[in-house]
Amino acid sequence: MASLQLRMYLLIGALFAIVYAVVVMIGSAMGVYDFYFYFFISLAMMFIQYMIGPKMIEWTMGLRYVSKQEEPQLHEMIETLARRAAIPVPRLAISSAAIPNAFAFGRSQRDGRVCITEGIRQLLNREELMAVLGHELTHIRNRDMLTISLLSVIPMIMYRLAWNFLFYGRRRDDRGATALIGLAAFLFYFITNLLVLYGSRVREYFADEGSVKLGNSPAALASALYKLVYGSARMERDELRQAEGMKAFFLNDPSRAWQEIREVRQLDLDKNGAIDTSELFRLRHKEIKLSTADRMLELLSTHPNMLKRIKHLSEYQAGSAAA
Image (cartoon, rainbow, N blue to C red):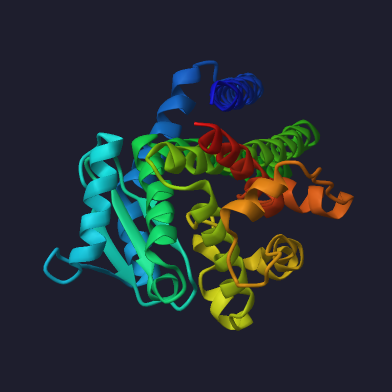
């Protein structure tokens, strides 16, 4: 846990150091030396995203909030996990999407919301669904929605600066200098985007660990992840594309299901469609080797490689078995 926290602190520091360096560089080139001019523009952009984000998610996924009378079992699970996590009970929503998945969103812990799709309800048993909900409540407890939203604004700013300077340079006598700044900003956009993706992957490991700490079995979460990969691989391509813009919020990346299913189904030794405790425990003693293509794919993804992720869960399983 301490290692993951250190990574996030270093990541946040690196991102804001890059922003500061770029802002100073561009400010000097434009004759604007006041850093706060750019700082307040950035804050305004983040505030707009922060305010309209939940509504955009509700509209995109077609969410329907459900009461305790409508879904007593789901509410009981959410309330139990919220009590263990010591956070306010989040609102519960259901999406009619066939893609099996779940996600958390909201502006704060008090505004936390958890959504599950109809597809996931038909796929997971109670223990697996509880582990998934524990993962999502950990995102809320750790304020991951705010962290990732804040960090993701940085590549957006770099992109806008690059675009403006590349075109702005065409209308000035010193267009060579401004074009160079635009190219530099575009390079920083690429680098900061990779760093934000890395931060997103670290938060997924955090949430997996958090679900286990809330009392859920590592094997149940590993089995749920396996089923989600299998369920997504069975979906039509058109259905997967409809949720492309939401995959950063999801428990796993549905667009990678076809690549992942070939690897993770090898963990299901008895071929019963789930990963049990003994299968997860055996994985702890196996070495995970990723191809260059898999490493590159993970580098450009919001989610960790699924084999590596389940491998991490196997280490938690060993710890819980020892306890």
